[in-house]
Amino acid sequence: MRIYPVVVGDLSGTMDRTVFYKVDDRCYGRKKALGSAREYTEEELKQQLKFKFMGKLSSRTKYVLRESLPETPKHWTAPNYFVSLNIGLCEADLETSTVTFDYNQAVFAAGSMSQPSVTMSYDDESRTVSFTLPAMSGRAFPGKQATDKVYAVFVESELMQAYTVELGTRGDGGMTSEPLEEGWNKETTHVYVYATDEKGKETSTSRHLSFERAAGFPATGRREGGPGGSALLFFWTEEGREATGHSGGGFPHGRWTRGGRRHGD
Image (tube, rainbow, N blue to C red; front, side, top):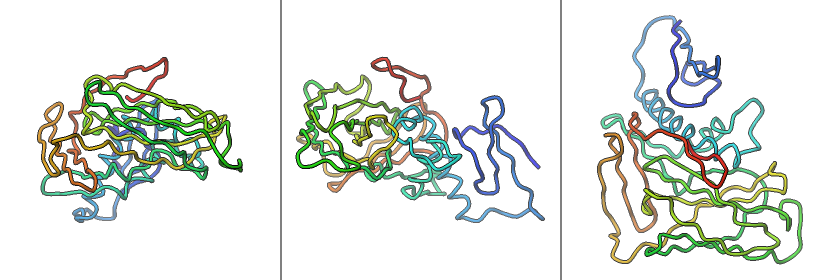
């Protein structure tokens, strides 16, 4: 039996014959013994790459996830739940040791409440994102109340950083402007909106909002090179975008605070 520190994030439970647990706030993995040594299958190696990537992403966004995923299954943490919701969006390439993750389909909130109606625009000159939340019309019903709060989650896929902005309540509506964080790139930033009840205990499912393509930006393209020497590839199409990140380390570290609230690691 082999015990070793885990560097992929805040995990618990069993994955790929490894039992994860925490001791003194450190995460450890204990490998289950096999009757005889064997080679990993190609599918098992791909799963390892996927879990390593998702563990890194869930760890770097854990402060956002704790707010957006309050309805986790029993004994699950918000990062664990995020991994289970999104692991199917990963594609692993063993030859390049990379994982492709579809941020357009990613789920940052998962609940049964009614999704909020929010529109978004972006001003290139001021690097400002503007949101319009119309005041609620029609009758209220369980999962759609005037006191529901609406939030936007900003995720920079290249930096693996995230933060949350409150847009207002369903009943009041309104407009909110948010400058893009310094050092963030519009082309690698994704925005998701979701609603919570007044106490923040229930949520809607998140919805991805797209930036309008800037004038002159190519329909297809490729950028190479990432922070800390990691290989990061970003592919763009008219239909949407995919971000491919190296499953290894090299992403920038450090915690930061925004508006008095602690956000992405």
